Image (cartoon, rainbow, N blue to C red):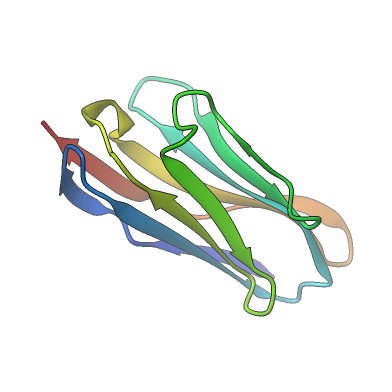
Length: 118
């Protein structure tokens, strides 16, 4: 059984910073990629950032230059450093990972709320 547990959400003023964490645990043979998504009520879940096992990163245009994704391979923890936050960044942020156990599957965390006040 694989679990992803997120932490670090909260309320911050516009222009502020937050760091989200996502810890993967369980019977993990390898992790191919870790991703952060975000979702506003009534809207689809959008991909924010991706990091692969090779260290390649990719970002949504809306967060480029402000958000940084990182991955500690030793602890299977991924981070999303969010700077210069804007009210439009307000959403529930979800961690997702492509993990090989006895098979390769996509796993989700429970989500963490980020609220940016103007």
